[in-house]
Length: 399
Image 1 (cartoon, rainbow, N blue to C red):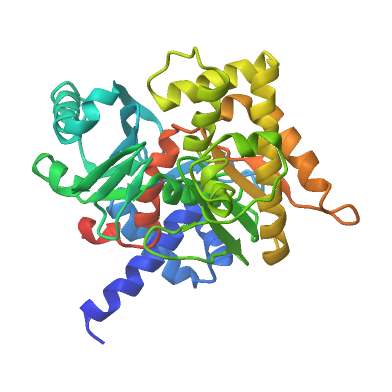
Image 2: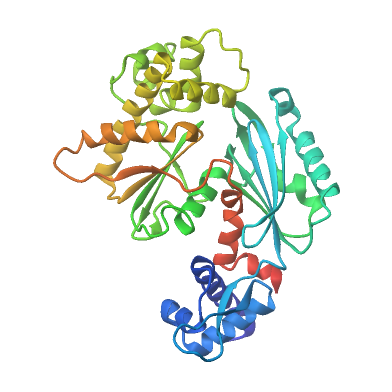
């Protein structure tokens, strides 16, 4: 077998060892051999490659077993590679420069107003030019990763952001003139799933449901440690699931639709449905951006305002019903929920878990929890870069 045939397998092995080192923060070669199943000689060879690529480094640690010389541990190297990540949401474009171990070097938020969406390409180019021109700390960039809180087509083109639709805006082509490193374009749900399952609240969980409640209702399953629906964007859309009449507010929105369609979850608990309720029940709200309306609702929920609590009650009624049905199909230890309503996560989760439990009176039910990482966490934005190292794909550019 020639070198080219060996290369993919070798890169996968390197990625696997890097991932173990990152998860344990400090780990010896002997421990790596035990955990990975690789022979000590293989571990020596793989770690030497990772050190030469400046991805990991040796660190002297106190040896508790004897009073001899300090033991040598391996850890992710923070002193060479940098990652540049961007998060594109309907109200902002956030760019973060970090060391490979997650330490932030520089961060900048570019507000995105509704009137700029029609010229989004110009806004993005202007933002990245401004960031690069004012960032002197940039060096040894491993990749540029963009996470989109919208919808991409199968070719990675942006087709929807908030309520704005685009004619296949190619983000990779847009940014290509500014970088000589790989450019990764991913949907937010994919990077969130990767972050939570590799470093977050699902790291030690083999069976979990992942739900994203946003402009769409996206869903995936972690079964026996493997992503069940491992497609291009690693999510399936459950917008068309129907919720029966559980709450009086369900009948107030989307009255122009046929009744069966009106009770689909996409017309009941997505952002656009909740926005309808906010506009209907708070006719004097002056917000033009949907994200600001959601924040307005959350503030009122915190203040225990009656109308806001009615909307929360509607949301948890419908979502608990959907989760009950999913749990009857998929076995899960926990349910990971991602939502921009993190500001009211305590009251949201308490109410949701109480309602979900009523569907399982005689058995233990999986708990709904929020992810470890905030909605705009740079860790989520960097997850695509980490995955590229884990599976060896990004390591080809370091050869």
